[in-house]
Length: 99
Image 1 (cartoon, rainbow, N blue to C red):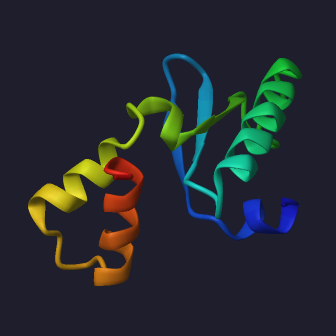
Image 2: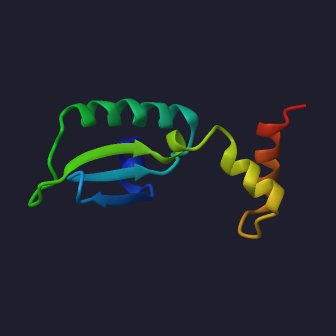
């Protein structure tokens, strides 16, 4: 899982006024990995670690925690987003409409 975290896309968002650097990790390969990463993020946040060479406290979050469940899938399905393969859309539909 750690290898996956290091290779997963992340957003780095500095907040000079709040003196924080937020690291927003994108979805991992499955829900269990996301849950494990969430627990790791909570533990890391509790340490209040400062970014080396700066006075910015690191805050770790998962992008999925900021969006309601299935929101991204809903947008992709209803807009017919061209960048998504037909297979990915079918999987998304099965998640939203399991019947």
